[in-house]
Image (cartoon, rainbow, N blue to C red; front, side, top):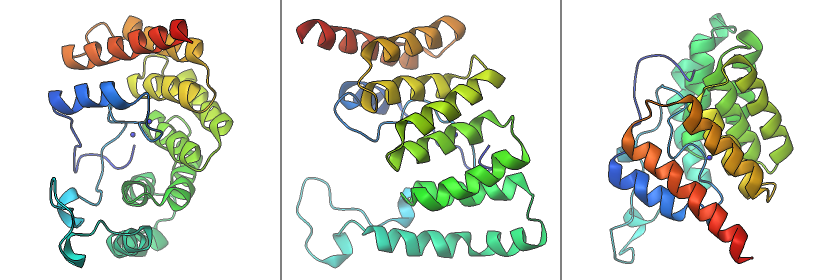
Length: 217
């Protein structure tokens, strides 16, 4: 609230999705990374995960959303050939990021964090990997640990939009610090003047919503 291996799959967001995120991310806990893609890599794609029919109750098991155990099984299968390659090249940061991203995309945050940690151990200045590591740490309930990783990432690249965005989300959601969140997002806009309009507008909405919520309390 991404590194992971270089050029394979890019996870982009449409304008509609960006505005939807901006409207709801103040009330959901897992909003990290919805606005800014922190990295690029092979991940379990939406088409590989059974989806519930839109606007209707599931008719049978085929339409049920997969359980975490199901998703863990999918991640293990997806990661299997990469893990085999990793045994022969255990310090390959690209492979480590690919594996981590597979587990992150299926909400296996503990496993993902382990591989992201190995990736940044190999390449400490990999800002995208460290930002993804922070997300996984936060999803496991450690806001302070996540903030520490994001601050480390920003020490290497103070302009990184994903790290600044996630820092704001974690300060807001995890630390109940709206002032800190607004500061991070304002810094994001300041150091990224060429941000695409839809993303700039979404961040501005987050800032306004956060400030409005502060004044109404």
